[in-house]
Structure formats: C-alpha cells, structure tokens
Image (tube, rainbow, N blue to C red; front, side, top):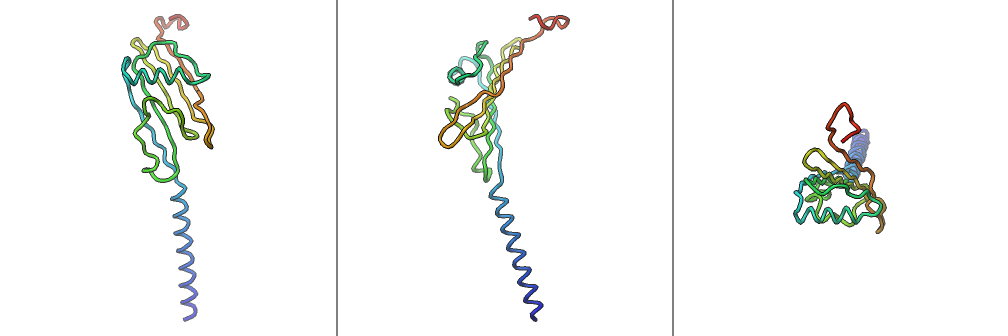
Length: 150
C-alpha cells in the first residue's frame, strides 16, 4: 500500500510540474501581427503619410511626388493573439511605437519609379523614436545595354 501512495505522490508531482511548465510557456509566447494597407495619391491619408515622412528626423527625403502608397507594419507582442491584434497601420502614422515595431512605406509611380523607407521604433521606457533602417529608390531602365542611364 505504501508503494501505491509513493507512486501516486510521484505522479502528482510530475503532473503538477508539467502543468506549470505548459502554463509558463503559454504566458511567454509571442505573436507577430503584420498588416498591409494601400492608399491613393491626393487623399487625406496620402497627405497624412507625406506629413509623417517629412517629420521624421534624419530620414531620407522624398524625391518624387506621391503615387500609390503601400504601408506595411509589423508588431510583435507577448501574450495571446487578442493582445497583439490591431487594425493595421493607422493614418496618420503613429508618433510612437513598441520596441522592434517596424513600418515600411513604399511609394510607386506610373512608369516603374519606386521609393521605399523602412522605420523601426527604438527605445522604450517612455522614450524612443522612429529610426530609418533602410531606404531604396528605383527608376526604370530604358536601355538595358546602358543600365546607368535613365
């Protein structure tokens, strides 16, 4: 009979530790929410995006008028999907963010001209800023034999 009690006690302890580990793992899970929205030029949203781009310190300045604008955002949050879910990148774009949050803005004009900016929120604890991490500008090549000429 004492063997059964010892076995029962050992099984109870093992089950309790497994439940605790599963609970701890679930509470430390992360969810990444990625959203994409597209806006047309000459809309209130496009004007807000233009104003936001021009307001970010030390960012590459626009070299083209705005065309079709695509905003992609990526935000990672600890906890459940419900905690991390959002409606996507708001317009106007946010003045602040969460550490590691990213926003990519792509401006496409007819004829193949494209500009892309990527920003990441750095800092925390009540402070921080959007910092540009990448910028690309592409123009179509008219003569493939002379790719450096537009």
